[in-house]
Length: 280
Image 1: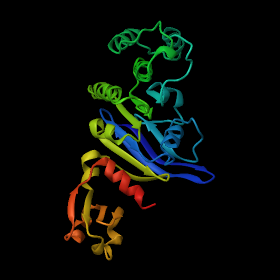
Image 2: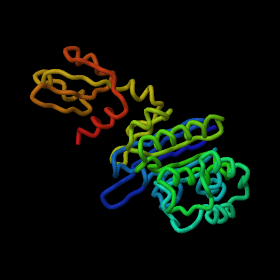
Image 3: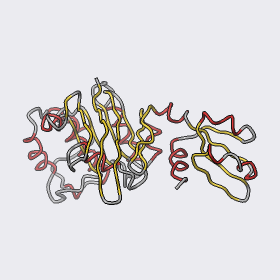
Image 4: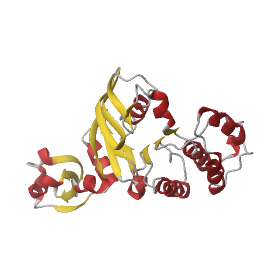
C-alpha cells in the first residue's frame, strides 16, 4: 500500500497557482522534493497537511483520507519545517515533556535511545545547540511517536557539509527497516544524489516529474557543440547556455538522434534542474 498518496492538489493565491499536483510514495524509500524557491514546495507540504486550506485535491496517509482522519493521520507523521528554532530558552527536557502529551503511542525508551545516539543532552537549552543538533532533536521527537512518514522542509539548509552528510546517514538508517519513508524538500541537489530513491520536481506550481532517480536521470542528456548547429534544434532543447565558444544544452534522451553532430554526456540531477529552469 502507498504510504503517501496525493491526488490533484491545488492551491490558488494571487499571482501563484499550485496546479493539480499528484504523486505517491511507498514505505521504505526517500523522496526528494525539488524546485527553485517559490516553485510551490512549501505550499504543497502545508496544503497536504491542512496547515493551509487547499482549493482541491485529496491526500491519503497509508490509505486513510487525510481530511476525514486528520488526527490519526497526523499521529503517523513527523513534520519538521526548516531548522528547529522555536522556544530557544527552553531545555530539551521541558520541550519533550510537553510534546509527549500529544501522543498516546510515545515511546520513552526509543526517545532515550535516539538522544544517546545523537549525543543530545536534554538539560541543554535549544539556544545552546548547533543547527545540526537542533535538527537531530527535531528528528528524535518525530521518531519517538512511531511516525511512519517523515516530512522535512529544507532540513539541511544552513548546515555545514559534515553535518549534512551525517543527517543523510540518519535518513538512510531511519528507512532501513522498510516501515518508514521520508519526503524532504531541498534545493541542495547534491544531498539528493547521496540518498534519494525518488524525485518529485515542481516548477511554477506544476509537476514536472515524479519518478525514481535513475529513470529521471536517464530521461535527459547534456549535449554541446558549435552555436552554428542550433538553428533547427530549438524545439528539442529543454534549456541551454551559450557563449562565444559554443553551447551546452539539456535535451530529452528520446531526442538524442537529433544531435548526432554534437557531443553528448549523461545529465546529473543538478544539471537537469539548472537547465530546465534556463528556459525562463
